[in-house]
Image 1 (cartoon, rainbow, N blue to C red):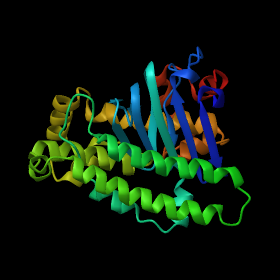
Image 2 (cartoon, rainbow, N blue to C red):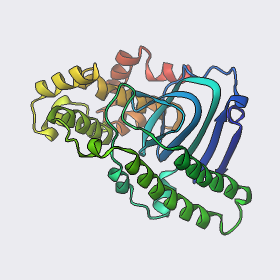
Image 3 (cartoon, one colour):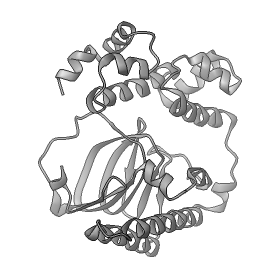
Image 4 (cartoon, helix red, strand yellow):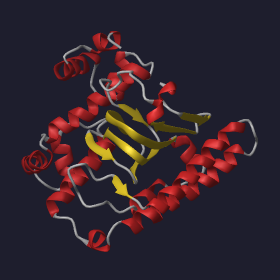
Length: 292
C-alpha cells in the first residue's frame, strides 16, 4: 500500500504522513475491505480531485480546499476516488504521541461543526491561503522524518503538531459563518448527535438501546424512532455496526484469540459472541479469520 502514495513518511509509531496524487494512481482494488480503526487523530487536507471516505459509518466527501478532522478511535474506509487532479495530504497521529505532547484532546471539542448536509458534518471548507499554510505544516512534519534518529526530531514534532492543531482550530472557526455557529441545534438533532457520541464511547461494553436511552433521559422507543427517521437505520443497527467493526478489527489485527475478543467486547462467553457475529456477518469468527 505504500506504493499507493506519491509521498510517504513516518516518525516511528508517532505519526504518519502521506500524500495521494494523480501520479500515484494504482489499479489495486482495496475498496471492498472492511473499515479499519485508528486509535489516534487524523487530518485529511484536499487540494484537488475528490475523495469519498466513510468515517464511523458516515460517508463524507473531500473536495478541493476542504479538510476532514477526525477524533481518536475512528473507523475509516475509502469508498471511491476521483483521480483527476487528485492532491490530498493525510496526517495520522497516534494517541500515545498525543499524550506525549500533553495535548488536551478536549480542545477539539471547541471546533464548531459546519451546518449539516448530505455529505456529513466533519468536512470544513477552507480558503486557498489557509490551505497553503496548512500544507507548510505538513511539509515540515514530512521533512522532520528524514532524520528520525536525531535527538531533536520528537521535540520538533511535538511543537509543530501542537501549533498545527491550534492553527486548525483557528482556521475552521473563522471559516464557519457566524450565523451557523450561533444557530441552536434542535432537541432531536441534539439527541441524535449525543447518541452517536455515547455509542462511540460505550459500544465496547453496552449493546442495549435501553442503556443509551437512559443516558439521554428518553424512552428506548423514542430514541429508536428519532434515530431511524434521522439516519435511516435503527439505533440497534448502529450499535451492532460499531460492535461488528471492532470485532472484525480485533479478529484480524490484534493477535487475540476468539475468546479474548469476546471478553473484550463484554460478551458473557465465546459461544454467545459467535452466535452474535455469525448472525450479523454470515460467517463465524473463525471462518472470518480464515477468510482474511
